[in-house]
Image (cartoon, rainbow, N blue to C red; front, side, top):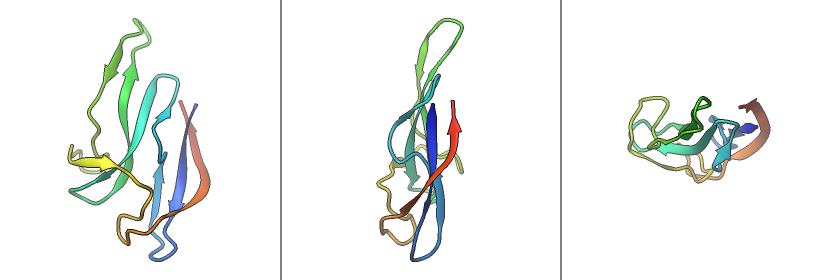
Length: 95
């Protein structure tokens, strides 16, 4: 079971929903990334397992917002203020 958390910046109040670390669900693995194009943070599917033949498909990380591949692993800092964001707890469980 994968988890996504809600993060909030105490300076600018920006909120981010992401996993922060590489997180495994039942059939997918995600990585939280920061986009260098649109400056948004999102979880990106990096591995997906097909149920019917157990084949694992690796995917290049990309931004969910603008679909750019120009992303880096998110370091937990606010994309606006560059200060550490506060983890406000689990936002959703996913599989």
